[in-house]
Length: 197
Image 1 (cartoon, rainbow, N blue to C red):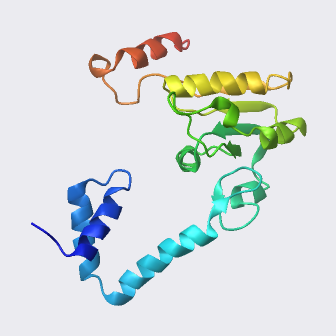
Image 2: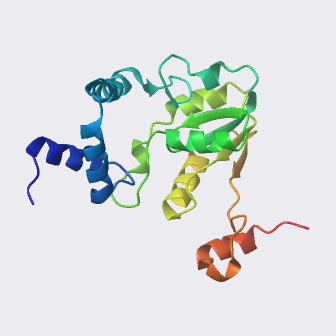
């Protein structure tokens, strides 16, 4: 069945969003169509404002609408611990853990095919590290092959800072997980990273 062209276009655009399949996109589009006009205009304006007024922080790379971001302006944070991440969405996840250090977001997702590690600009990171305040860098990267390759590359790139302690997020079984249904790689990482009881 052919839908009205504006409705089809909206469904197509919504379906491009992560986690939104064609059926969900259709439901959302039809819901937006029922919205009062003022609400639909406010939604459209919010998207435009997001694109025009949100950008990476000049210090850490996290998304912000002011320079520097609220995290970099927070004097309660520990400047000796720097959490190194690929994307700003990762900051949001780490923040939920109660982490109170600083961040550095690469804003680049490395993929084994189609990415070149040498394209990652590390000059700003090296400037931060050369200040001497950072004592530990936590590599909070994806627990997959790409994350492992990226972690090794970054560790080599910042190895000139001999005083730095380089750490990586622990790998292993999730709380509430079942060993029987755990994949082989996760189980191997859990065994390798075991701790004394």
